Structures are given as structure tokens and as C-alpha cells.
Length: 312
Image (cartoon, rainbow, N blue to C red):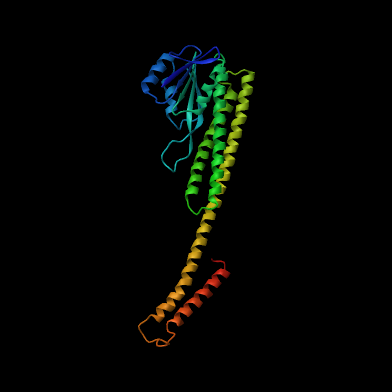
């Protein structure tokens, strides 16, 4: 689906055709015919538009026929039904600067673009570089928001792990860890991209825009550092709680073994006195009470011993 927006009198207006200064936003569902038509209409290389279809596309920039391409990684929720997949993944967002328009291509619903659309009425179409930088800003903000959400999920999962002997909580943490791996990789790629943009001045920024870009690099570095810290904490937590669950399981097995031993000795006494052979006191009036007494005394002694050893 292709959407056209224009800023008219500080209002975001949807238009039918890509006019000068318009923002062209391409969202799912994506059709090859639409790509081909738009590429011909706006004089954009077709591969610039289709690069967003590759979820593993790296952050980069490129210039061809005076058309600028910037690929940036942005976070999004993972809608996979597989319970072992990460909660969040990263997807490419493509920004294309044509001669007269700004084109954004998303292979998934993109929260950063939605935030940018909500503030599009405050933008100045003639300041195209600043508009691109504002998209970068929304992407960084998304990373920070998702990192806070991940940290919150991690804290809740840790609290549940204290009383858990099951693997479900560890699998939950593993999904969080996968999300952090995606984030660390994407943030590192984005940081290198922004630093290269600053070094080469690919966008032709003025001094104010260069300062804004530098602030974005700092924010991206901060998000990357947060992701690395959360990853290290999570790895340590998973190792620690894996040991705790193993120790809890060992304690349960030790208790069950102790109970089995306590019950085995009385059963052994009863088995001996239940044999169809002549045994001492077999004809005594107390023939029933003797094995019962021996069994109870044996069970009490063994229980006292195991309690002393703190196996119960």
C-alpha cells in the first residue's frame, strides 16, 4: 500500500499523487507491481524499493543517479506463533531521498514511522535532511522504549523464578535474550551508519543538523550500552537460576530418596514376618505386635537420623 502525505498549513494532508515536497510511505501489503510503477514514476532504482523486503538487510547508505538510499534497522514486536522465538526482532526501514520527495519503505508495521507521521505537521518539507534525522530519532526512541519493556519483563520473570522448579521461566528468559541479541546487532550497525554519515556528510548537513546527528549518535551509543548491560545481566541470571533449579531438583530427589529408605525398612520387616516358614515367635500371642513395633521403631529412628542430617 502506498500513502502520500503533504504538510499544508501545519496540517498533515493525505494526497492522491506524489507532489513536490511530499512524503511517500509504503507499507504492507507490498506488491511488486506497485514497486515497479513507483520506481518509474519517481525515477528511483527498483532495488532501492525492494531492499526492505530482506529482513537481514544491513544498515547502510548508497547513492545512485542522484537518488540517496539509507537503510536503518528498527525494532518491532515479533508476531510469530512459535513459542521459542524472540519477543522482539529488528527489521530494515528504507529511506529514499529523490529529487523532490522523501520515500519510506517498511516491510512490517513500523512504530517509528507512525510516530513520525503523528508529528509530520510540525515538519518543514524544504528541510529534508532534518526530516530524515527525525526519522532516525524516532527509531532510537523505539529502541529505548523496547529496552525498558525488556528490562521490565526480565525483572518480572526473575521474581517468578525464585519459587519455580520448571523450565518455562528459563525458556521465557531465553526469548528475551534472543531479543537482546537482535537489538545489540542492530544498534551496533546503526551506530556505525550514523558515524559514517557524520564523517562523510552524505546528506550535506549544515552545522545545526550535524549537531543533531551527533546527539543521535550519543543516544544510539547509550541504547547499545543498555542492551549490552541487559544482555550480560540476563546471561548471569540464567546461569544462576539454572543452578538454583538444579539444586532444588537435587533437594527434592534427596527428600524422596529419604522417604523411600524410611518406608523400605518397615516393609522389609513385614516381608520377613510374612514368609510361609517357621520364624521366631510365630505362634506367640504378640506375633502381630512384634513386627509392627519393630517397623515403627525402625521408621522413627531413620526419620530422626535424616532430619538430623536435614534431608527432610
